[in-house]
Length: 458
Image 1: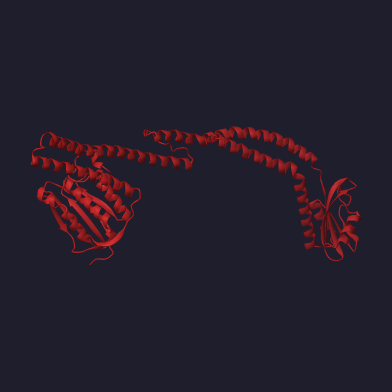
Image 2 (image 1 turned 90 degrees about the vertical axis):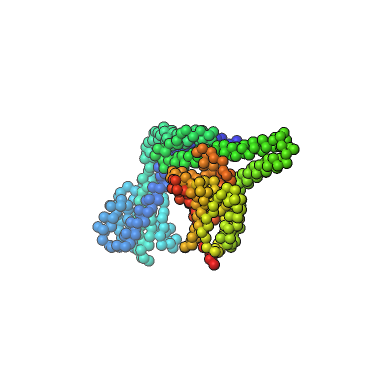
């Protein structure tokens, strides 16, 4: 069964384990392996001393005595199996008269050899390093291995006390360190639960002095802000979609009741009422289609099918659809474009962009009912759609691409469209990687534009 522990417990436990490992290493190297380490150190010492003698070989006994004294070792030089020099034979630990190991070395045929034996004179362990200088001369260097039992006992007693103190300190310090590290994360977890429940009235603290935790807190604050904004947009969307659904449904219901109760025998009025029902049903259909289109595009389920087509021809065909508004509402379309302009893009989606921008201009243009469409050619193709309405305040410009942003003001029923057209425009243009934007001046109207990379112009 998996045992789950709090972060504080994990940090505290890891610190204790780390402390125990350090103590274990201290015991291993300071007590258990100290004899072996001491022996290896002595071997290195006598080998280095022998190499020093070989590099500066001399019959000068004072020089050899000096080396023996400084390195605290015994030196014997044998020539033709006869000792020609021996240092400090009377010193404790020196072993220069035992010919058994010498004969064994001579008979081995080796050029060097390390020997460990017991000095019978003092009953101590002695290390001997034998090295041939040439065919005649052999150098024997030996050093006694001082007993370390007393030292080891002292170290053991000392390590017991040190280990006990270190473990106690590790428990205490580990507790405070784990608490300091885990506390801000625990606070984040508590606030994240509030965030999951839709409570945005708090801030994640980013003053823990731990870079990673402070970075996480800043990221969560950003996520909270975005979620709060998204939740606000969701509420606005629900309110406005409900409004846009309620109005045509109420009209459909009312006109249907009129046909049933009042105008069923009057063909002219009945047909007029049926036309209203048809128009409102079409408005509902457009609303549902726009919502589905936006959801599909934003979910990246709708891919681009690029092709080359004439942008000017596309715009002229779109304008023809608004002929009824010219005749019935007096809308005036001013078009300034070249005769032909070939671009490479998704034709259906660019058509939807232009259609939605014209719908937006119709809904918000001024009393002159004028809509201006311009296309400029330079290094890029720039398409502009202008209205002559009241304009947009500068602080509102960054938000107009949001779904139903106009709901923050007094809700206005669109002449045509559903209130999410600019969100669809934004999503499509971003999928094409086309630059887009809006220029507006209060009281003088608004210009929406987007720029297309040119492929060919005829």
